[in-house]
Image (tube, helix red, strand yellow):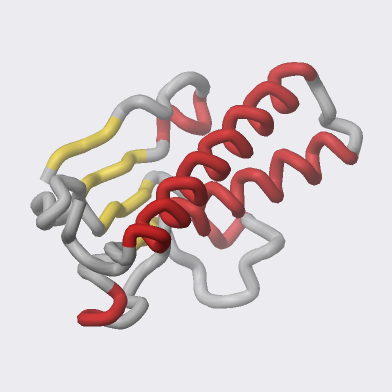
Length: 129
């Protein structure tokens, strides 16, 4: 296990801990991350039991072999894009959010481009480069 600190910049982020739980897989990346340091009991959007940590589990292995067993980079980025678009449409619009949104949309574009290229080559869903 290792801990990530790249998010630490303010009191809220300073309290959040991100732990990489598993060892890197075949592609060199880990698949399970835990975020802790919060209490969901004070979050009005939480309608279930209170919790103090959340797991993020990424797809592990080719979908034709393993099925869909976790989230993708694209799905996680889509969530952040949606939140920033919402902030930009509301009272918290700002230049910094606009720039972050543009960069995330660009990241999403390049991930989609990579997938489409792999599909054209017939290697999407495999460990083939």
